[in-house]
Length: 461
Image 1: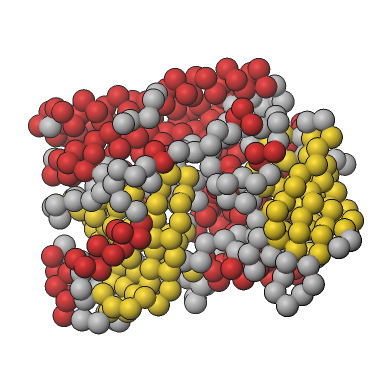
Image 2: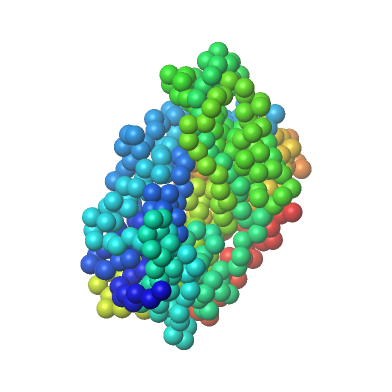
């Protein structure tokens, strides 16, 4: 089998939403782009529904989803503890569910319209470097009903959008010290399914238990450890329901698939699955370094995921657009200084917020299921705080609300002892993003990263 030799300005590995959007934006900016995907193109990326935020689509320059890609928005979300105790109701829920399979297809069509060449069914990526810089990839292509072929592709810039595995990232010597492998305490095992409703009366009884109406969401937290959720949204016409479940993937709690099975056992009014999927999602703050000579990371490969509840679609879209903007007009899009501008922009804009919310993920883990239940019963979550988390925007505590919060914390001192230090660390972490080094300076980056790590502290056991 002969090897076909190709040359592009940019090679993007991973054709999910983050990679496809990066390819679109880079091609629109005048770059010749090749998009590689290990699966069939239509199967790339997440294939289930996910929560999306309109402000992130707007900021990324991506058209907002429209039906059928976009599901009806749940006007209210009811948050309850693991014992079913009512917690807080969020009015005007900012989160909209969207079909990731349809969103991915829309972005890949846009990429092709912009001139991006897509090659799917790629196997066995080998990386060639020149010094510390990635200069080429060699891949085998085994598309169904087509002769196998081999490609050797040179490019000035390689974009790793391959997900948490980081198939390019791990071959970059400069990035290796900054991108540690993610363990189970920083992974979420999640499942999301769209189901038919077999028993309408059963669905109504479920909603009545929580004072919810058809079309609204009920989210139970703390069911399988402190960081865990079961969110059920019943459609307005009571014909269908969406179920999202997840917990830490450290082996001590459950898995997304098992949580889904338990949900169906607990709520027998749920019927057959219409669509859905499961996966592992990184939960830590973004890696401190997102680029090196010839390579940039976007999406899950960069851990650009909202840590408090594991949503990464919006951040991945933002990252791809910010990368394209950073390299626009550069004679060498893979130059270290050019790519440093991308990572500095992302960290200064979003990094502090994501690190601050990482403390919330750590706090829920430290509290455990019982602690989360006690926190909910004590009324330590209010609508504004929950909405800020759903909207992925940091909120400075309202001083007028602090006396009431202090009173509630005094009622549960063991919970307060775990919550307060982590909440204080979040307040200190939020401005740290704005102190990210602007210039390419690895020594300065090391100092910045050490300060962030000290503020975050060790992972709770």
